[in-house]
Length: 65
Image 1: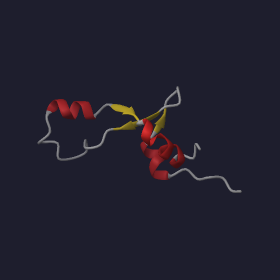
Image 2: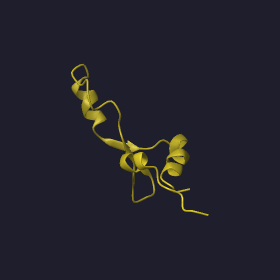
Image 3: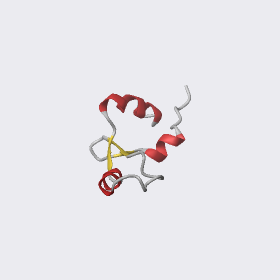
Image 4: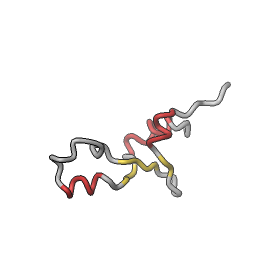
């Protein structure tokens, strides 16, 4: 059976942490920033972890399952 390929879009968007969690960036921070408040833009620039409900799907895209 051949090896499972990693989804090339997913490998650009997600990163593994040392503890095995998956890191992601927030959406809505690339354009149309004039109507968004400073606080909202600042909070969107930080990275966060993938929600547990989506974890299995992301792991499948990253060929970790």
